[in-house]
Length: 248
Image (cartoon, rainbow, N blue to C red; front, side, top):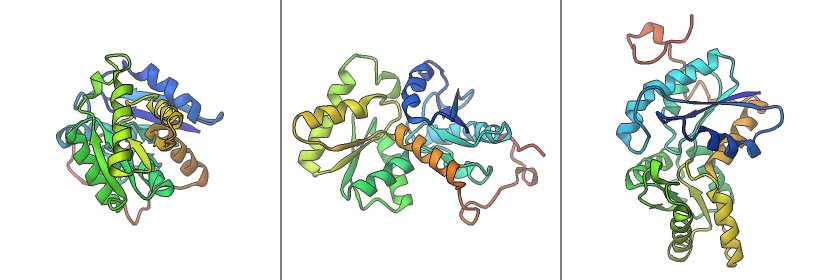
């Protein structure tokens, strides 16, 4: 099984850390290739960023199918370009939000999300509404830190997230929490351990772990997106030049 992981950033400086983060969640017969964007927004933290990066993400997904990959994980909780790409390829595609949010709904009926900014919170709220799970979503909290600053100061991200987790349990009575950025690497295990130590064993959902597990399950089960929901689009019939056209 071959899976392409697209990190929708214009830099590869996080790739080695992401590779290490992914390793525990892939089966022995699975190979992972990590790539980045060559054009688009430097990171996806707003609706504009998502719009600007969508053509490049879709092009990379189309290329992945042509290269023989079995599935694609777009490593971002905003699920950028996912619905668009599903109209272009047959292989399964997942982002960070849907698998994590649906998993949260399975283990909790009152869960929350911690994201990096208010603009990202609005993106996540839109996704929850579209997926029909917004009634279970108790709250969305923001730590107000851009992606490129998440790991800038050692220990700061841990402290900020731990504070938010405690507040969400106390103020919103959440029983599970989704980490709202795939850049929060290593934080799910840390937070789970810390909360268990103080007698509050809340479930912290790592979007990367769940997305990769879900994608592998889909591939093994022969599942992909429904063509009744996502009719196949043939760009050769349209005058669209900003997205890579599938090979004839």
